[in-house]
Figure (cartoon, rainbow, N blue to C red):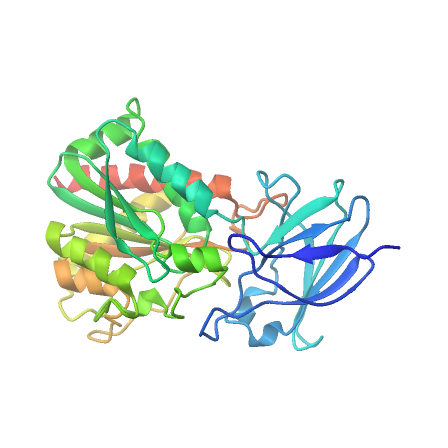
Length: 378
């Protein structure tokens, strides 16, 4: 029987082939360039129609988030449009932690990924379509270390300065699927939520803060191996030109509301992390933040407030992180939205788990909540 072929030499590709025997393979995840982070994978298997694939990704105990593997199922697609989930199991005692993926494709080509990829080409399409919409302007905020543009889309005539930005951590591709849903709504001239938001707000949307890391197949870092979400207190052109460009643009516009969109490897739920512990914390600012979470919780069963990160003690917030820095710097209601790589266990989907489709829908709920929140404060 012939061996399958596995490759990852493409946009966001990441895998190392250790051995192939027929339809079985031993694999490993390549670390981010100049970094110890490793978790994202994206590869293609050829020559596999009707054959049960048994793919073992090894040495995951040394990955960035080992707690992300128990209960996780790999994403799989035969047409690169619809992404389902493959049967997957994790054994931490096997080969220093092994995820075993089993799948029998109908076609000769099948793709696997940590989450449904969002390609640079799709990013270009998203930006071009939005920029061509009435009332939308495009800004190139800056240039990445690999020479890519940092795209920002702006719209609205209101006084409230809203910043939405995603994929500081490039492997968290659900964040740009969220952005696609947000821009679909915001650029729809018939959508009443979009029309009202554009009356009340000036919206600044950065769909991908880290196109270099996205293209390189990184989990958390840019071309220099730098975690952008630890650079917001003192960004430099040499280490984090992406953060420097975005923060400079924020300084020019001011910020009243900000959402930094991410994905979480371990927690099977959608949740929001805030800015507790910043030096300039006020109860009023905290109440405004909590009210947004309450409204979103009421709006969609795909959001909850039980699970999440521990909050920082007073005065102990990490100001190198964007949510804390933006809240402290501008007195803004700033937050980090986290979506799961696994599923929302309160409302599970056996076929897809958490998915691009659900990410896009959550964006619409977040923007509807923003409108309700703003109208309450008026």
